[in-house]
Image (cartoon, rainbow, N blue to C red; front, side, top):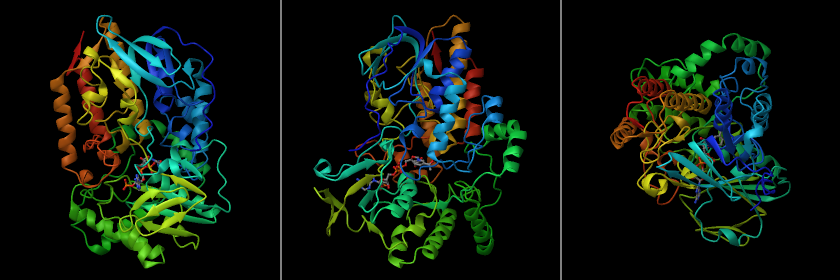
Length: 544
Ligand code: N01
């Protein structure tokens, strides 16, 4: 498989043998952590597998890659100078624009000198007597630290599908999360793409414009809403910059880390005409959350959700000319229970003569052959296959490292029936290990940067608390953790989220326990709970 140009030699520097904090990952979490740690006069190293900062935005370079949260909201709030001086160009910036922002932050705060690039962490073990972690890298280095922070992101362990014959294929293959840095020219090629999540939905229209022929293999249709992307106007940038503090506060108190009007009505208490007018407005708004937050009960009532689902189905049928293709593109699960997508010309792309949709519910893939993809009814031949097949989400990046806590307990074993955390930040048996946006926190149900900043601030306050009180370690009690896991599950059970076979449920990884992993109670509520825990002397943790 062609992957990003990342297979260069290791970082020539040797990391220090001992620091206060080891951080894994130099995405938005790791960068902010490093900046704050320096401000606290704590020594730190960051290990990063890529050749530069940026995390998600370093790896996911597939054509059409963009964020689906608006740039002025999807940005750090910790530095007012940064907020004021940075100039975003587009409403929904492209991957290169976001990567440039990450690189600007790294330059501005001189972060790279403590980041060891091209360095994958392979193992970490806790020494109970010393209350230290020893973190090992693929290059054989070992660093000892009091604190160990996994800032590895929720969607970083990419996943190829479990389809027989994957290695037999003779053409070029690509995974959207490991796109070659130099780009790919599909001109004149017959291309097959497997997967129609956000990565597929964004890349399909762009690849379709280049390839001679594009065949899309769809197992589950996505709900996709038009992004209505555009250049930002100077007046809206100026307005945001003038009001940033109030906006940031509203983000922190909101449900998804995005201030949205709070709905007051049920979708079922208004007329069909009124409802459709509201949905139409939301469709035109170019927003991921506008439809879902239009009424109080769209995420909790099947009947209410059915009204929004019917609206989107109608839109798909209006846009896509071939009725069978339109029908195949209509999702049958509730809107919002798998992460919806924001697109540019996604449904319109199926009106092109060179684009074909294969509904895998009717004709499943049987195997990958030397020439292409064999479905139950026929073989398709390709010059290139693109896997837009997603990630071992939320837990993969954590369990891929051999993390051993007290008594040699491995995190993989501790989480064999699903992730178990307290607040999505820490896990019993693993003192002084912190996760940024871990399972059990709002994470992927939120504007990630808002949740990242909240976790980093909370974790560093906790570390500061230990230092000021002459304490060495903190670890959640099993009782507090069990109660939190129950609470996360209970909140999910009030919603429609568990109804879809989503990566949030672990459903895309065969054998992965079926548990709804993020905290669905909202960013604002969650923050209050975390703050209460801290205010009560880190209630639910044993400090020693
Ligand atoms: O991955 P996905 P993604 N045979 O897991 C299919 C964020 N993100 O990279 O649904 C056939 O969503 C799979 O089918 P199914 C965002 O949070 C954000 O697209 O499992 N098909 C699905 O269609 C997003 O949700 C942005 O039935 C197989 C697809 O592959 C998350 O990342 C952009 C298969 C995988 O979709 C993940 O998105 C990109 C098989 N064996 C990503 N295995 C933005 O900000 C899997 N599939 C816009």
